[in-house]
Image (cartoon, rainbow, N blue to C red; front, side, top):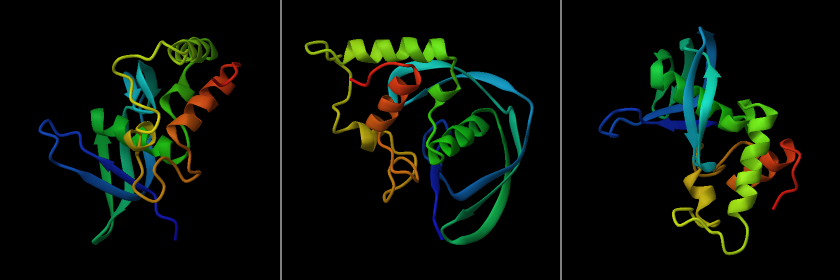
Length: 162
């Protein structure tokens, strides 16, 4: 059986990891818009509409039978965001074509020779930093890397990949 794994920690001290194996959202309600960012698109943040609450979700743990949970606030956003990664989506897929085109132009500009941003991670570091799913498939079941995400972003915005 194919395993999809999400590891999330929304605690203030960053010491309460939650591991969700083969997560499924069974029901959600409401709509909330929050600013999101992602290591797949470093330094870019924008508002994304998602369900406000996950009223019922199911997942497994490494040492236990499947369990159900409910989530709201940041945990609900994180679960939806990370599940998108498992499906090969990034948060910019929810943006308008105009915003994606502007982001693609911004990324092209940053990638021009001699214009490397001081805080930009190296190309070799991106796939590891963007990992939502765990070891075997670092980005998604389709094996997409951060570079694949950027290429797809350029393609959907109607730009040539750099």
